[in-house]
Image 1 (spheres, helix red, strand yellow):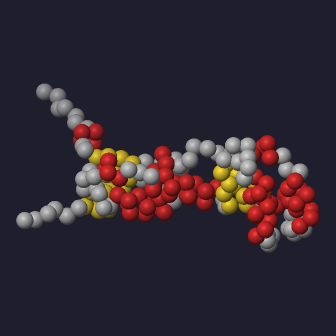
Image 2 (image 1 turned 90 degrees about the vertical axis):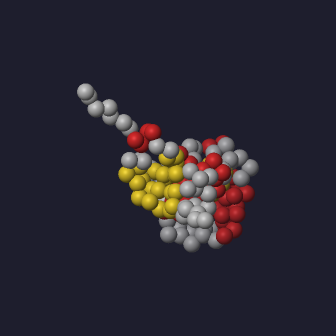
Image 3 (image 1 turned 60 degrees about the vertical axis):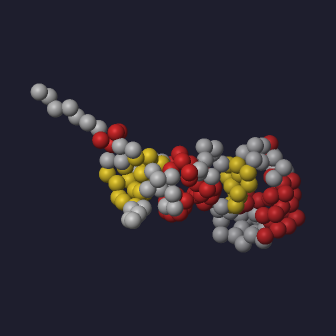
Length: 172
């Protein structure tokens, strides 16, 4: 008689959360201040304002724009304000920083919206491996959100997990 192979992982009551699914789907556009600086290094107010006024804002309509400076220039705070005043009317979102910083912020915002009640008294695995690295802050935040409600929390893959938290059994 042939032995029946049973997939215990599929039959388990484990719920898996893949944090990669909480990354934004849009691709942001870079706005590099370097292009608006004298010799790529110096902010000259008059020239900076003029260059900004010639910016084709149609390139940014409805987009997520990341404002950064790829050179080691000292940028006065008013320059960022001018960029914002120029782009804000047409963009979907304006963010100062790198793509990685923006993705991290969006991930944390998405985790904050998770309805944790759906995981009440459940056994939950936070997926560990993937194509797009999840920053440590994401794992920290999902643990903070789920620990108060789950029965147990694990890291990894359902077939091979690292236990993180297990709710103590109540004794009479």
